[in-house]
Image (cartoon, rainbow, N blue to C red; front, side, top):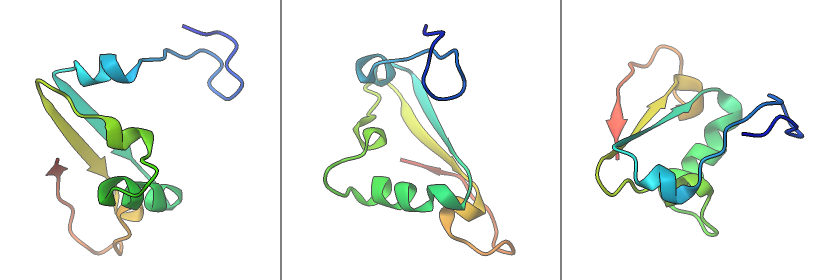
Length: 84
């Protein structure tokens, strides 16, 4: 745990990719228009890969919780849950 992180919040817990991939379940929460491009690149597999593209739980699932702005959908569109 770090108490001197250069960006907020000042106290963070860092997990390695190896630890995350050993998880039973991984959930991504993606919110806001400013995350739309990163989400699109992650799901389409652009090169070089973004860190989220390397998350592959070996004994579980990876779930994405995405709001309409991040998904690029109009506010009146329905919502759904997707697991990859």
